[in-house]
Length: 623
Image (cartoon, rainbow, N blue to C red; front, side, top):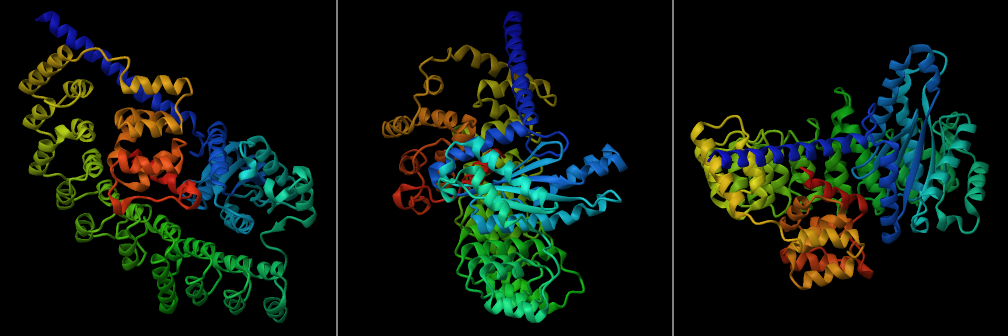
């Protein structure tokens, strides 16, 4: 008996050490990818991620932009106010770049006072608008400036298209070279270099030189034209001249209102992004036929709303709310998603708009609001869990900072496997004892619930003993190591550990996980093999193979496949480098996505979502 106890104790100690090492390794990996001072990606992690994004970009035939951002007059701050003040400036700039980026974008500190930003789905007009916005936002750095040299930024941007393929070095070289004309033009400016398809055979140097000849455009391009001159430009000027008027904060409101119906979409985009645009024009732009106009407008309005002064006339608020409501019902999910991401933490947003976004059938729209918004009542949350047919809605609600017992009851009643797993993993979720009993009753056949059940600290002795009867050996060890067990429960769990060790045979080297690992190591895992294994119905192997190919934990891949969410399954297939044809097969045969939730391919069997949308669906399962 003593020898058996020693054996169990020894196994437990070794497993405990192994789990601690795995956790430490994961923490170290996160730290190794992050800039210690600012919390954004470091140079190595950024370049690794950028290389993967370029490969996806080539496959999806879409555009993007790499922005290099360099602080102007940063040395003067260090010299005059010390390095602690300089560190504060770097953190402020990192926060600024995070605020001006979207979910799925990459933000990094490359070293010193150099930062980088990677944004997908940008053409030249939108890259121009982004650069202009960055320069305007840099005004927030002014209070931290040295006395004689105001802080600012210069931006060099390189557009990327499918022609870049895997030419990471060429893309970086173009962004780097774009910075030189920006700096030479007096700082506080930007320059943009087009991608390979636009450059044709001219080469990087030729296009950089041509961009420099045009001149980098400053954030504040000299004094505003006289009113009559501005009217003439708005009515009969060139597109470039009208765009210049549309970007200025000091253009007269009636001129901006007139330009809201300009024939050129790039002018209307600039009006949509301009914070000086009158709200009457925003209402017009909310109905604009150009998708990018509405996206830029959604981003601006959502960011301006919390900063409207308390004394703002009710007419201004009414018009702003009207534009928001129109955008919240926009036919393009990306517009609605921008609103959701920006309003998710707001206490000042119109409740009706927030509730409309929360009820959205697109998970990518509803989930941020459902997880974070402080404006949603329990009545609304319960209604959404029970009546709204959005696959990810219950899971997002289960992750809220506070989940009442009433909402928890509704989630458990839905029997949504990922949602209940998220609820169990949420330490602040209030779950009644009777509800926990219901979960434990169903848990033996729902492996995704096992680990969060073991981790919960509100399980009583009886519940712990029931859980010990069906969880895996590794989780039994975790149960046994809890410090809150009474003697009887500790003995019962110890006996369960001993029985499990005796019953479990050594792993078969031909098991699905081992086979997936070996094939991945040999480079044999590809689209054709996965499609063949799906048809053979070897779902276990497919799960482990997808996890390997996507660089994700097997538990995460399994949870995505069990979610029955077509969007999430398609995103996993995309991350694994599979074709959309195989992603469709995966939805039907492995994930068993219901017909109404199946995601269909675009023409030519292309993926129907943008890379940042698919990245969001993958990251949603990080918990």
